[in-house]
Length: 120
Image (cartoon, rainbow, N blue to C red; front, side, top):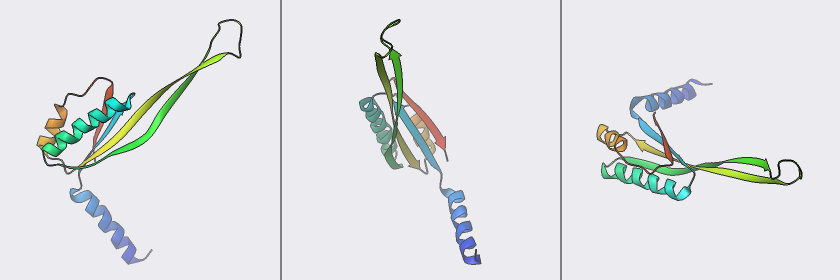
């Protein structure tokens, strides 16, 4: 590598390390309607405090399939399949202030919605 490319890479790292804090929120639920309502609440709270919001970004759906025998003794070939779909969304809040984080911790979301929050 030349000195110019290494200087560009180190400038990118310094730019990332300096002031680019972000709050990454991953929201998961079994029902997409409940999930979209929760995401809308989070975005509304962030927008109320003038925070920069990126997203919601839809993530791939996790599908868990379970196969069960219909009969206990006979008809081995007769089976039933069940599946659980887990819908996911990701929201980034760029350079969050303390009041935004405090407002997000006090938000009341519906049951069945799980949230993972990371500070990056």
